[in-house]
Length: 530
Image (cartoon, rainbow, N blue to C red; front, side, top):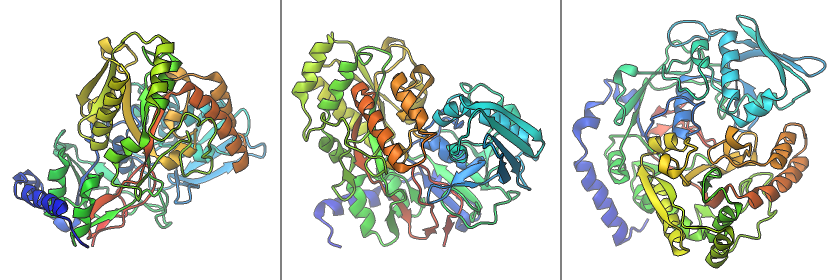
């Protein structure tokens, strides 16, 4: 490969940074380095409860220490995980579940059906699939210590799939907390234990192999199958500066780097000890989420102005190195899913249409209300796109202010429903796998149930009635038709604006093998250092 002078300069910077890495990383080296993996994730971990937040860092943490009743395989089919046997009554309204043998909490107590019932009920308070499920439930109760049942008012064939949607089992005493109150015990029944003694918030977190974990006998397949842990310890290092993180990867101080800067891909590709790997080929859909409860975005015309303002190609330039890894995105349901469609996308225009956006602001009576964009400082793409969006808003006369903070603080603040002068917000940038946008039961931002829904809290009873039908229809064509009708409403309501779709490879040392490639999350079982 030919390396340009620009890339040689970057490589030199990375090498120089490697020489200046603090001895802290070296001091944290496990006694058995060959069976210890050091990872730098895309942002810091500050919230540990996967019910309280949907942030990917938290769910990756949950996949390590908790277990699930069912999990999706690589074909997105639900497979039993903690469940050993399950059955369905003749009238298709009663599901019975029996837990498999060998399930135990990290504190030494046994997993029981009561734990599972409490976990389902807590999760269902806030997750879109759970909310729709509970509207159809007559009863969820344990039959004995190892068995429980879900009794429905009407048949629901998608129930196993719904139970795959980030539903992690917790101890009954933890799952008895309100969904708004974070669980902090970090005691699960999963393949890793959280090492509380070595936890250094803001610096590193340590996960140890759960020696008592009994995996399923099936081969690992997506998030399903046997969760075989092939290392003794995984350390999540918090290195906020990506240049320093890349230097650490080159020096062998870390083994895995999530979200390396796109303009440094050539440096990584030129290093014989490193590899770029795409774990989620569907890519990531980036979007700007607006607060529909507070001015000025409580006015639908101001939200619609955002659709016309955004020039996706300009945003992609700061998120991706070129067309190999990026594309524009118009469909509310993702660009690569079976239900992607072109319904009501007349607003999309190459280069955007700032004059139309300004016209809509005028029609809405925008009076200079402050717009606060929450800017994540430890997530480069989110930081950069926030700056671009602020500049574009300023050009059309919007009074905009960036509020810099780390992602953990942002994840907490975005739950504030109040006005900006009371700690609220107007816009934040986020992303999710393009594949997940094909399922409005799973993707949290594809719900529109007002203050009971995801951050931004858009509300449309018509849309929600259609989303509820998703649970009932059986064919892909029926779902395509539902998606078209829902998208018509969605882009009229405009709860968010798409910024583009990006395939984001991770960087790793070449001796780190076995990473599981699935949308959204990166589980830590199955990987090993060859």
